[in-house]
Image (cartoon, rainbow, N blue to C red; front, side, top):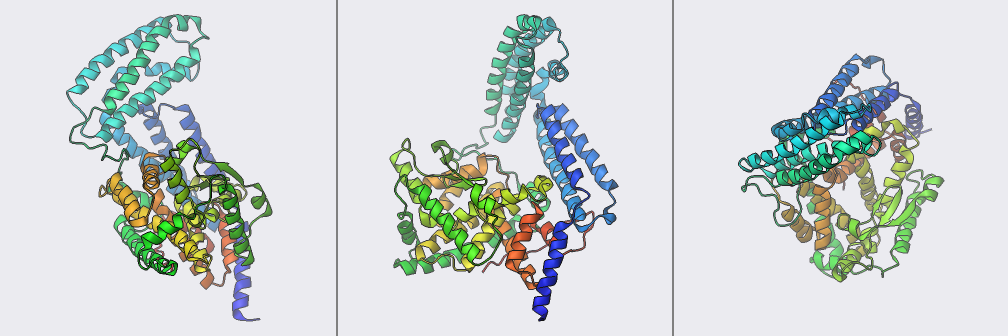
Amino acid sequence: MGFKKIGIIVAVMVGSCATAQTSKLADLVTEFETDNRALNRTYIVDESEEYYQRLSTFYSDWKKRMNEVDFASLSQQGKVDYILLKNLVAKREYFLTQDYDAFKQVSEVNNFAKDIFPFIENRRRGKKPDAKLLAQTFQDATEIIDSEMESWKAKPFKDWQTADKASELIVSFQKGLEEAYDFYYGYDPDFTWWVEKPYEKLNEKLTAYAEFLKENYSEDSVKDDGSGIIGKPIGEEALKESLALELIPYTPEELIKTAEEQFEWCKNEMIKASRELGYGDDWKKALEHVKNTYVPAGEQPQAIFDLYQHAVDFIEERDLITLPELAKETWGMKMMSPERQKVSPFFLGGRDIIISYPTMEMDHNDKLMSMRGNNPNFSFPTVQHELLPGHNLQYFMTSRHKSYRRPFYNPFWTEGWALYWEIILWNKDFPQTPEQKMGMLFWRIHRCARIIFSLKFHLGEMTPQECIDLLVDEVGHEYANAEAEVRRSFTTSYPPLYQLAYMMGGLQFYALRNEMLDKGWTEKQFHDRVMHEGRMPVEMLRALLQELPLNKNYKTKWKFSTEFK
């Protein structure tokens, strides 16, 4: 038997044993996340001194618990879980502290509420309030807000971000007050008789106060650059800390440089495909040709299914990964609403694939942009990204294997895995026609652009409008689709690092794949093992697969290769 074959057998045995290991920390991870959810469910006024103090104590207590764990006695699985949990506590505490500092800067706007807050606290245990006294307290607070608004007019906040935070304090308090009021109203006759009218006046005043504070900032602070997209840059310091907490050992500037290099590679490949199509070096004309390959209205679901089946057949014929029969059976298909398409102009995936295509209510130009942006050649590399072996397989497998690691979710693992498959399939000649190549390259260059514009936005070097222009001029997006992409990046719940995580996570997986193949693993063995280990930063997955030495104060250090060619 040859040495290479022996190496493969040994690798399989090692991989299987490591996969089967259980972690002593599994219950501890579940306890932390469950406790965290319980506190957030209890302290619903999340912009209050009470909330910040309670969560600060919670994270401080967990840091002490982590220090008490006997790290040396843990298995490799347990050591990885320890580092992941310790890092998660640090991450949550860091962002809580950032929010708390911002809260302190504007906490004065809530001074009127100090006599009302005990009512919200006591409601949690159903304590009967002094209705007459509470009604007077509400009445007094309404009058105090009037004088406070006059006072704040003379001292606007330094910028619109601070004004937003001040407004959020009032909205958060208003939510807690409404919840407490609804608990007693109609059930306690005395409460209802005394408090109804004063509450209605106070609630109306709170709405006006929140709206006022939101707009009460210096004229020198620019909120809208004309794009209508309002995002909040987090700044260089927070970006660097966020990268370290996600175990990415590169600076924003290094990541931008990498993205620009990848961008140029993609552009050169697009020119090659353009020449195949007969458009010479004019890749934009070639891209226009590809956009117009869209299918007629009503036929997109069938086109998506055909692309899915083609990708699955291609992957299974090459035995690249195990695709469970139940996973192939249970994914679903949905249509995206016109409203959601304003934020997500392309289809999405996970448990289901959500198809973005025109509906009859949309304007004519919007219909065409949606069809052109979702043509089969653009969709060619992304159906598998959303379904199998991408996001759908991730959801399927993480629900069944080491599901306790769900709190360690991060976009570099989630989006990186799906993007990694686009790289692998490109290298295996998945695209056969120049149109298919243009489709794959369009998305690859788009992911490079995401790194550039998202990091530069958070560094304060690009405005939302400049981000839109980059996607239109340098990537070839339809304007409405580019606008939706930027809006999705900066005005939704996606974290600041989300957009760069596609390409960077993909490069991490690709670098790890190459290392494991050099050690004698097969591609299928590597891919299957990834899907059995659950969610985590790729650097920790590497430590797990390679049994690398770890310590309880582990910091990111894996300078993964940024080459994908």
